[in-house]
Image 1: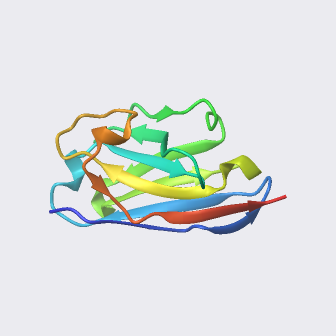
Image 2: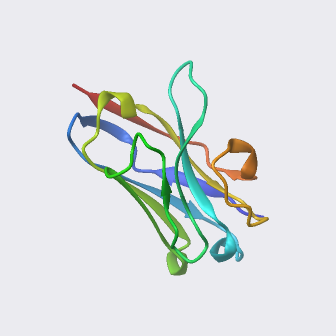
Image 3: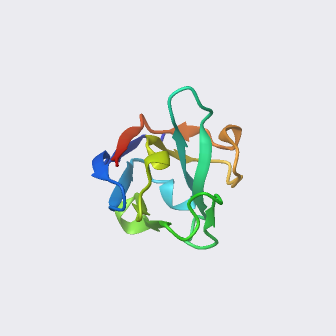
Length: 124
């Protein structure tokens, strides 16, 4: 059984940077593809970035490409999302997700483990 806990969210000014962390429990974390999603009020929960079990093949949505970086440290059971050049449109609750089946994807239904979310607010 895997538990995911996000941290690092908060208030940041436009143009600033934040690094989110997702700490995972469970011995099988290292084989899980991982992802970050985000959900703004009244909006759907959308993909932000994905990474494979070895820390390679990152994927980014068009809106964050070139500004965000996903990474993982399997020895620490942690996945990260470095967010740079933040915009007001980036404000959302950010969720960490993993798939024990190894089905890396860009849709919510592709992931069967989820964190509770961490709020990122961007002021202008």
